[in-house]
Image 1 (cartoon, helix red, strand yellow):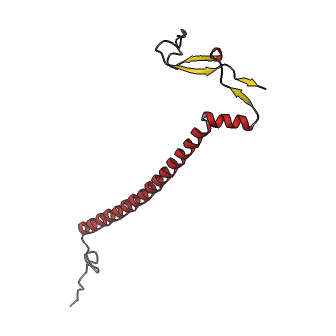
Image 2 (cartoon, rainbow, N blue to C red; image 1 turned 60 degrees about the horizontal axis):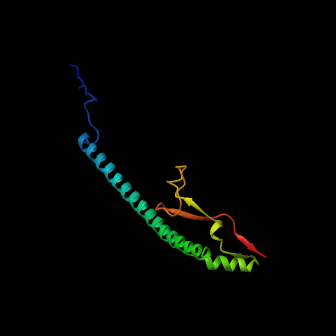
Length: 134
């Protein structure tokens, strides 16, 4: 009698642990979601630090601007200008009435009709020339 060997189908044999595909998908999705959340949190914190830095710079620049504006207002005051002229040895007086030229407002400038300063239109005084006394 002939002994028959049983044929074993090697393809049907499972030698390892079976891991369900749906569970693997859930794990991958959960890990991607967790990493995305961590990345978003770190990005938000970085942007927050940047905003705080910019706010500090804004406060410093505002203080600097106000300080420089105050200095400029002091420098362009009539007393300061007179002191500077005296320091340079230049003696000047205020212009006479006939040396003052009236300029129209910029919105009125487009009209070629220049109105007199006695009317209600806004006017700005300009000086034709300064008188220098020597």
